[in-house]
Image (cartoon, rainbow, N blue to C red; front, side, top):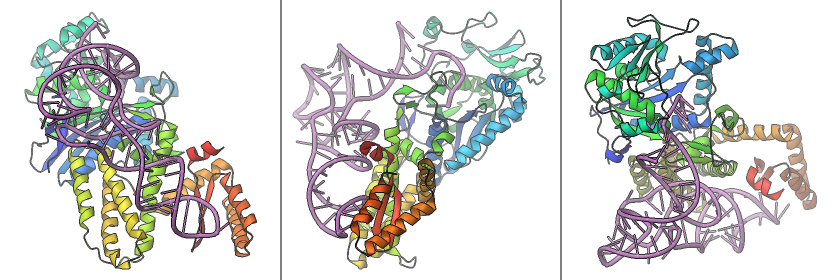
Length: 486
RNA sequence: GGCGGCAUCGCCAAGUGGUAAGGCAACGGUCUGCAAAACCGUUAUCUCCGGUUCAAAUCCGGAUGCCGCCUCCA
């Protein structure tokens, strides 16, 4: 089994061959810390988190670097708005970022450098580019000369002359070529700046990723990832300046994830339809978002809609209940597992799917089939198959975990949702329990009319009652289903 | 204007040459005092036209319709 990765550079799926046989060096573009993260950031983080988990599961020693851009025009603007220093802006939103990412169970990368911690590395890189004639100074700024790098445009596949002709490029007299981009910018008097041999100022946007990826991973390194929008100009420019400076390949595999639309519309600040991760999490369990994104191939656009999220929510519940049922049947931890070949087939297919450019949608299909297999075994009368059940359930859980799913105990998963629901409906847990108690009494005395009234009354508040030998439990009714009835 | 992508069951979504995964929803059945959950069963020939091939959702050409990027953006 070999991993294949779709490489944006070649436009093809390629066999993955790391520079070092055992190791993978992986860089993903992080965020600019000037605001809370939205679900588009979440998608990128989840996609590359999944890749990170999978590479590790395959036995690679992975060095994963994800940066923070903590100096930039937007941060400066925000610091004026919020009347705090630009450093405080960065601190504030880095904290926010971690809260969101931790909630989503995004694993921490190996290194998370901040741009301003590596100003010296950037200065060295700019100096090198000046020395080699790939950059020039103009009015306090330093620009990269794209004509000095013959491969410019190869990543984004744009013919140079047409890009200039297309001419939505800002005209700037200081630049020799309109497509030249800033490596270093002079600062205005009240802006943050660093002293350098080529004048005081602050870094251009692209230079940080070149400097930090090279520092932590060397050249070339294996995988560079980010959102599709970063292909041009960010990654094109990173590539140009790094390869021009080092005369070696910068990156072997470029990976880009697709965008998130909301209700069929592009999510953007100007339309005002951005959905923050924290707002999503106040309504749903974090794994709902992960399962939702993993249900679509990472390179395709995905349309966020309330219905899709509700569907995903139902699907996730099903997986959780499968585990509950299995554990209920297994009861004790002491039962040994006995291999089951039908499950092994699904495991193999799971890995084949993941090997095929991280086809998580297909991999998930196999997880659902395992879920079905577990449920079937739970329903079997014959207890002699329990060791098989133990085996299949373990496999089911481990593959789900590998995708970052089913991390919680069911009661934790459910209780969060129940509390959110009670709050939304303005219900007290105690009064709910009282009503359930009354119904239990009514059922005991065979007063089914009263019992049904209570069931119906609670159903109107989105609460489903489940009677079993163990007593009556309650669950939150799927919201979209509830809406259909009202 | 340039570059690129997409069109598969009611909805979401895999599938790049051999007669279509999975999820959600729906319906029938088992179970239940009634329900729910779970399980079993049922529900598609892949936008249209033409071509290549023994064979195409999958390759080629064309049409139509969506969308993204080219400017900060995950």
